[in-house]
Length: 339
Image (tube, rainbow, N blue to C red; front, side):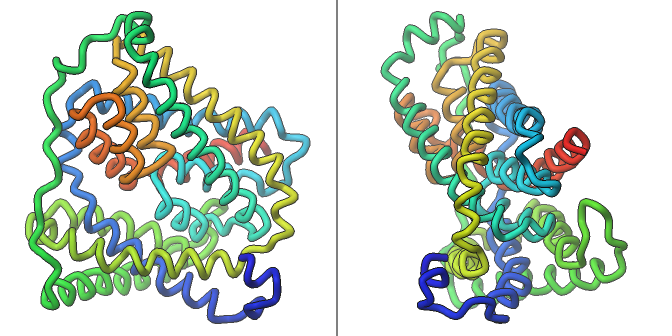
């Protein structure tokens, strides 16, 4: 984005749009092959409850906050709320998916990227900082000790990424992408999904998550992630090249919305934690699985208890799987309340 803004790279180049349109579905397909949903259910009831409360706080909280800023928001602000909710219940791949589905305006997307970065890492710093007060907060929550929770099983180990496995991963992801494009071309546009590319992303997400539950496909997870990560960076760069520095002027407004949404999320997590007697460590890990991802959630969990590391990983994978769908729910709610 900076390179284009400073004139070091050409602006409005057709290659940027071609990369995002054609490579994004394939990238999502590769990354989602590494999401092992069956392992998520081994977390236990309390972990899933904590994650569910966190997701609810984001999906309901952001539209509610946006309603308070209604007079200052543009007519298509509901797309931005849905995109932000998707990345705060899933991760970067969900941010890119929803940007493609909702056709989030470029200027708004610039402000959203800045808001996501500032709020998510500030929230992570806050969760780590309050870890020193965990014993006293757990007493206020009347929390049941973490030792009573069953350990979460980690995702199954897949074989190393050989050339053969890489070929199978690419063939599977490409096949799902082509099938999704064929189906998307036959689906009508709606007020929520206005283009065939949006339908393609949504169908790829659904088909890949379904395929990832099949044991032979699970064995390709590590290799698929190895191939998908560089592709994700390339798509992020292409989207950044399409963004505009002019969108930064909208950043204070979205930062205010994001901050208020994070506060609502935190209050709901504490209220639910006291009601359900969930320990602060589990609440913090689930919260970071919402705002962060598969890297930051286990790190926050490790600050509180070593048993929370695999739980943080599994909760983040659940967010990756559901983030796109939850972002669409938040966009629909925002469109309803902001109309």
